[in-house]
Amino acid sequence: MGPGRNLRKKRKRENMKKKKSEAASGSSQSGDWFDEFCKRGNGHFPSKNGLEEFQSIFGISKRTFDYVCSLVKEDIMAKPANLVFRNGSPLSLHDQVAVALRRLSSGDSLIAVGDSLGLSHSTVSQATWRFIEAMEERASHHLLWPSTTMEMANTKSKFEKMCGLPNCCGAIAFTRIWMNLSTSDPNSILWLDHEKRYSMVLQAIVDPDMRFQDIVTGWPGGKMNRWSVFQNSGFYQLCNQGERLNGNALELLDGSKVREYVVGDSGYQLLPYLITPYEGKEFSGPRSEFNRRLMAAAGVAERALTRLKDSWRIIRGVMWRPDRQRLPRIILVCCLLHNIVIDMEDEVQDKTTVSCPHESGCPQQTCGVGDMKGASLRDRLCLHLSGGPPP
Image 1 (tube, rainbow, N blue to C red):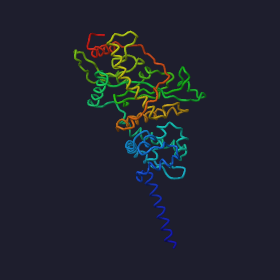
Image 2 (cartoon, rainbow, N blue to C red):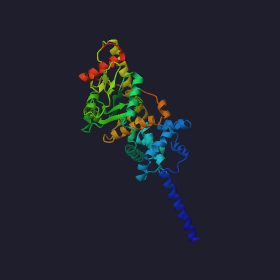
Image 3 (cartoon, rainbow, N blue to C red):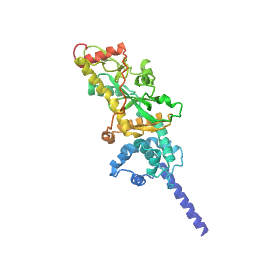
Image 4 (tube, one colour):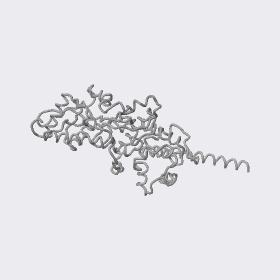
């Protein structure tokens, strides 16, 4: 009797160990994983069916979710962690990704996410940071400046088809991530603007499909406007060194040539490679039409930032005393997820509603300084679009 009982106990321990291993690796996940996940929600999740419910909870489709899991699997599984639900069962790979996406897409607090899923707030925090670290390592290829002539040609072609601007390589825009900081922190004043609000900046250069091609974040929004952020960016340095926007010039029908450039609003300085609108109230027809077309192109970046904040709501509202060293990493991963949704041709992208401008309540700033080479390029573009004499 004794040996038989010991053998059964041994087999039971081995089976339990196997189940935990399968759960941790995600190999036991099947079609019922999402059902089990929703059951833990205790009625906190929307009452919808199938894929629609999945998308409403995570902000991405099931297919994109599976792809994200495949990206981070190696890194997450290589770092053992004792992450468990309150009932003691371990979090699988799918569970960890789901927890992180729920936190990023809902913007709910660690406690709220934990309560809705049967987790402690520390488990939510750990799962989210494991995911963020893995995404930084494994998903960086989804946010890159075009590296081939074909990729850049595709970008230029789409911009020209959209608004008529030839040889345009991107649109630049700027937003703030709002924060609530402790006034007892002596460094908090650096993040405070003239309206007594704390923020961190995000500068983005976007392609015609609203994909982020280049971002800058981490600077204090209280002391830096969009132009000062641009001047301190790596993109600015690369352009000045001739290592970015350095492709072939395009010859127009009149024989003049235009170099590669990006477009932005009047908050940026007019440069040989950054084209901004004509300023003033009284315009000739050609200048007015040029401004309309340029702002149509620049508006792509504005819409991308609005969609980013609407989809990944952790950066949409006012963040309660965030870790300012970690916040740029959160912003980066939200941008990576934004691009992945586009790259995967995720149907959720088309259903995302735009709630409000990403910079609601912020006055438009005008840089008011121009560069002669930039002015010459702008005039050539204006002439090209009007098909008439110089403006």
